[in-house]
Amino acid sequence: KDLGAMAMAYQHVYVASVAIGANYKQTVEAFAEAEKYDGPALLMCYAPCIEHRFFKTGLSAMSLDQKDAVECGYWPLYRFNPKLSREGRNPFILDSKKVTGDVMKFLNRQNRYAQLVRSSPAVAEKLQGELQVYLKQRHSALREKAAAELSKEATSLKDGLKQAESAAEQVLIAFGSDTGVTEQVAKKF
Image 1 (tube, rainbow, N blue to C red):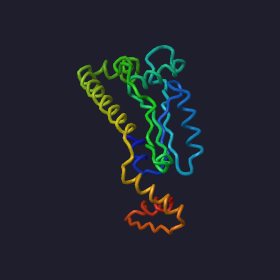
Image 2: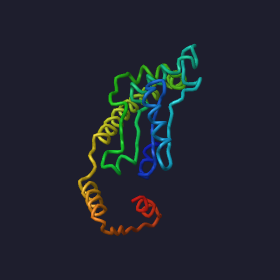
Image 3: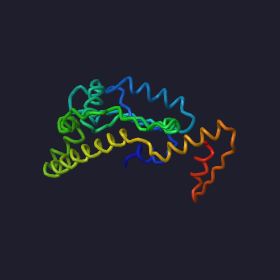
Image 4: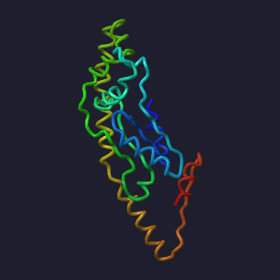
């Protein structure tokens, strides 16, 4: 399941996917933004365990493992800051813009995947092929999401609200919802 996508669907949760060994600067920025954000925040950090490494180095090569996971698209780096949408900007920032690594190289170094290859080579080959396709599709979708502009309607509404505030006119925001989420969003304006 894509925990990040589920949290972003709420539109009021700060969400970040980070890997300190792959991009230290992005990780620090995400933690700083999450701390400043006035609302719930979810930071998902790629953290290999001993079962991930196939080599004798164990966890001493953890940062390399994180770098490989990001470079092949297995672990995307991104930040979703709802505050940006209130400023008329895209709240989704994709920090791992290019997939340059080889997913098979990454998988072959993982003990958990190597065990599958040894026990069921045909199943492993099928699943690895499907994973390669999925990672390409997911990265493409994330790039599109990062490049998307906010709708003209939302921008127009925000411009209208700013003009009304500057003219000291009262603004009535009507909302309705079965779950109460709309009420929470409306109260933020």
